[in-house]
Length: 98
Image 1: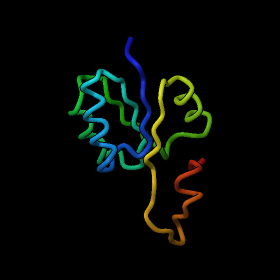
Image 2: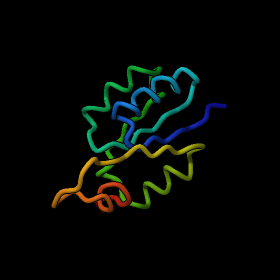
Image 3: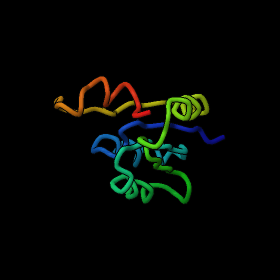
Image 4: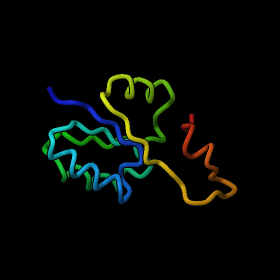
């Protein structure tokens, strides 16, 4: 049975390496990301339909809870390196936009 894994922030350097390795172990990987264009190259790491990037900004808390509930494992790599007026740690990492 294939296990489902969710990786928040999976389009970054560390996430893309984790995805590449876990795709070889036949995990189904869901990647909520704020940069959908950047994460499309992740699909090349697995077979067709194995890696599913979805736009994080389009999800509400209910959608996120549903995705997490249906998964076997969740990895959170979502981060920012410094705060600014529009991007704070709390608003960018811990909560969604809706």
